[in-house]
Amino acid sequence: MSPEFVLETRGLTKEFRGFTAVDSVDLRVQKGHIHALIGPNGAGKTTVFNLLSKFLAPTSGEIIYQGKPITGLQPNQIARLGLVRSFQISAVFGHMSVMENVRVALQRKLGNSFHFWKSERSLEALNERALQMLDEVGLLEFADTLTIELPYGRKRALELATTLALDPAVLLLDEPTQGMGGEDVEMVIGLVRRAAVGRTVLMVEHNLSVVSQLCDRITVLARGAILAEGDYASVSANPLVREAYLGSEAAVIEEAGA
Amino acid sequence: MTNLHIKQDSPVLPPQVVRERQQAAQRRKLWFYLALFGVALVAPLAVYPIFLMKLLCFALFACAFNLLLGYAGLLSFGHAAFFATGGYITGYLLSEYSGLGTELGILAGTLASAVLGLLFGLLAIRRQGIYFAMITLALAQLVFFIFVQAPFTGGENGLQGVPRGQLLGLFDLNDNLTLYYFVLAVFIVGFAVIQRTIHSPYGQVLKAIRENEPRAISLGYNVDAHKLLAFVISATLTGLAGSTKTVVFQLASLTDAHWHMSGEVILMTLLGGVGTVLGPVVGASVVVTLQSYLSNGPLGEWVHVILGVIFVTCVLLFRVGIVGWVLKLAKRNF
Ligand SMILES: Nc1ncnc2c1ncn2[C@@H]1O[C@H](COP(=O)(O)OP(=O)(O)OP(=O)(O)O)[C@@H](O)[C@H]1O
Ligand SMILES: [Mg+2]
Image (cartoon, rainbow over all chains, first blue to last red):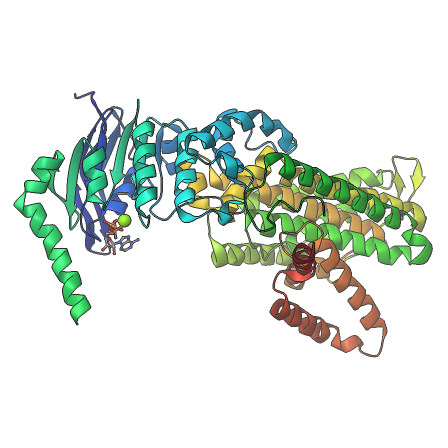
């Protein structure tokens, strides 16, 4: 019994037609930590996220959340337990207004999602809270904008606001800074740091400077298996990790030269 | 223009301006619907009521179909089953029980379609895209063959001479004008149910699911159950349209259950503009009008070819359908 670990996997494995994308991973995420999952492209990070959030069923292994096995649950049930994910490709509701994006997340707790006979005015009680959440991520002025018209960085901020509207206990963030310029990256660092207060965060992140600024603990994944684990200093000093990263970079250079 | 200081293409407008614009749009919409209602009230003075009633029944059918395709993103290829079930049940009950009020006959047909919709939905809803279409088609074919064999449907002849009966024991529906206003009322109720559904707390979630299903799941919504509800509502209103059509024509036949009928409603919806409120009404009007004009003229045998050509042209030229295209033009010019 180790109650301080809010999320744990035991021997988590996922095979795609004989190809092992995730190879008996034992991951332990401590409560209150910002925990990074890093690794070269194709290491299996997104697949781990898909397993944790039940978007994929594991080939074998177990997932334990707050001391209880959740391996057999449906993805929407996981979300209701407070384990909420974001996506590598920004996931927003494009043809809804920015405010409605957040509101539809707040709406779930009202339990009126099947009420087709009521006016949508009954949702207006949530507007104030939604605007507040938008304000926290600097999107208040965009509240009435159609979401597809937002620039990319803002969409990611909106995604985070939507996720936080559920008040999750554990946040799974898949590359929140992917495809962002310097200013936006700074913004996301600030957002994650604030979001992490009183919560646990597990994030996939390629930008190592973000990892070093934010994360308490780092797990390095390579070819589906855990290669190293520890704080930033110990992980970055690990020769195996350096090799894994160099190896992939060397491959990229070779490809570019060919 | 009084608001020159606001950049037209800027996404950021003061909330107050946005509110005002929304309210103005609401008012314009209300007037537009009132005008349409006025036209519908006097239409039978100028146009043959039976034709108008046919139009209203198919418009309701297409609107119900559009709720599923346009707002839940589900392409059913089996809606003829619900249209026909409503028609057959209503036709059978009104023929067998002469004292039965017409409204009860229609209600029963509608309920039967709802139950069938639930059955279809439970079997099909987990499938995506083309598999969903295929399963609904297969189930509808099954229903078609049941109607061919079942004793109460009259086989190839169908149910003919279904009595129109009385509405609430008060109004004699054999009078075409009375029946017309009843059918208009049925259409308005069905249309209002769809409008409310789209603009309800449920409608918001449905929209979110259509926009990004994985994201809706990750927010904790049971996506399949929400889709199922849309399917059942759509099937129910389709049944209502079929039942009403049977009362109008005093006929329920295998034509209603044939997969051609499922295809026709897809055509109407796409032609008018999927995911638009009035698109299905316009699409149904165009198709029904063309059918009735062409089939009476020398080109009768070419109805399907002509409809096909119009359909292909529309889909190629304005993929968003007639109403979608008009809305686009309006947006660009105002
Ligand atoms: N549904 C799938 N079917 C087959 N193979 C898959 C599937 N999903 C992922 N894979 C494979 O599993 C491996 C791990 O993919 P994954 O997306 O988890 O990597 P990642 O670490 O997130 O990479 P990136 O940094 O590029 O996002 C890859 O080789 C990928 O091709
Ligand atoms: Mg990934």
